[in-house]
Length: 262
View: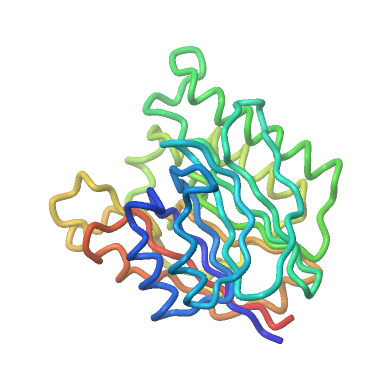
């Protein structure tokens, strides 16, 4: 049976419970992966989500920061969660659906403002996190798996509004792009979004700092959907729900969707 998956950095699931419910009611993805939930697991507001058909959840949470959750209409069991780079952060959770597909939900560290690990500890943590992702997937080659999340890197030139201007900006520096590519290659992951939308500018994040984010359109594609080669040809219909960035009290990220005929 086909299922549709969405990934969204919600920037506080409790603050934006109404927006999550709106997405569930209007778009109805079978699986919804959230990042930056900023909530202990026990305080994620499940009642409304369950009323909309999302009876299954796996999550890692912490108060006020980070946090990842997978909400599903399809039966799902937890399939692990790694603390890459030993940061003590809730940044990864995996769930296995009843069709045997494992969904990995990641929130990669943003990396601060200065792209230099000597000057900026957070940038070093980001690179270390990606290196440990690479090593993990080398040692545990995934099969029948999907990886989604806010990976906090826009890898391609057409994933940012101005490639040259952003080469020294965290999220698009060559060293970050190389580290992300190494993690991707280690798992054999295929970029589903760009398989479906191979050409053209494409963004999933627009800064709160822009007075008119829509008109300025200075975006970056930080949110990703990948799949292993054994199921990637079942993926289709990728899209970014740009309109969600314009909802009342929005996240600065928009949801990214893909459908899998599995």
